[in-house]
Length: 365
Ligand SMILES: Nc1ncnc2c1ncn2[C@@H]1O[C@H](COP(=O)(O)OP(=O)(O)OP(=O)(O)O)[C@@H](O)[C@H]1O
Ligand SMILES: [Mg+2]
Image 1: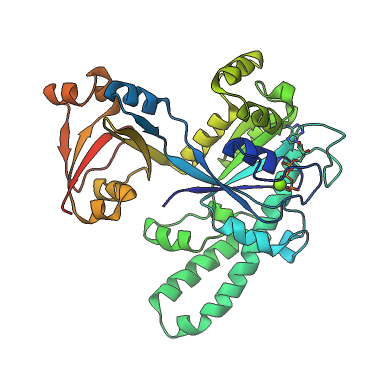
Image 2: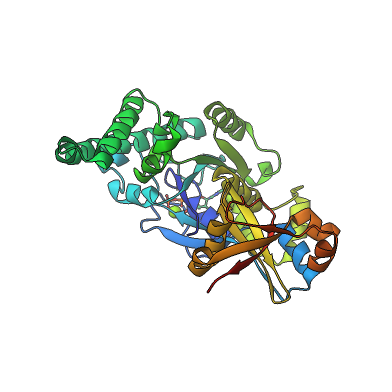
């Protein structure tokens, strides 16, 4: 399956710079002019997790394979995008396909880097983008409601449900509130998600600050943090320019560089972790002499579906999962130690996998 974050924001705020740092490539053209990016850039990023290294060293695994998350660098949005301004609707479709939004906000002053509105005001920028996303949702809802009328009249149950949910979203949007503010009954959750409304996607605000503010943030990022908190959204402070430099260094050089900047870890690691949290994702591990590997699931996933992330056959033929909690695996120095101490549990189909579980699946081929 794989989870996807869309990198969204005004033109020329540093989205592609961030994408390149994340993917350790120069795949996306990043340059000082608005609408530099047109076609979306897609890249897979390893999710940093120190636990995986610990497990691998205990088990003597030859290979370490982190779990991955996909980032999509999308064209800059401007006021009027929902009516086709700038690059218009075409890239709103790129956002529709993502699970969450990393909204990059310009929080640095630099007279040499153009701001499309000629000023640095991340909170106003955030509102501009949110408004465009809301307008785009309204337009798509109105179209969809029209398309549904015949089916609804015919009594089609799914259509009736969709219509009810679309109308609930429309009420909020026309009132100036994003669709994520609508309370949704758990029974409707799946259908609600299937609507793929832009303003139901969870948001992580990424404050792109100047190099000197990477460790501390600045007045702009403080305003964004306050806004995010009021919305119940998440925010991180990062300097895309620095991250791009770090991503080109080897591990040792990067360590020294981070220390110089009084940063504990690369901003990217914080960003990826924040994205992971935003999507309510968890990690379980498979560990053996050949490889130690991390796998991503949504929290609350049952053992068979967790197995299905590795292979569909594991889910279909699921028998049981031998389970060792991460802490037990580490304290008891591996599988045999955990087994002897009675810390290896045999779990069945109803088991909810926990973050950090070390799992071994048994299944009928
Ligand atoms: N933290 C920062 N400090 C100073 N300059 C920065 C910072 N982050 C990015 N820049 C510069 O801003 C310019 C625009 O960057 P970039 O191309 O990544 O923006 P973008 O959001 O992808 O733009 P577009 O929407 O046009 O594709 C580049 O010249 C880049 O070097
Ligand atoms: Mg770009």
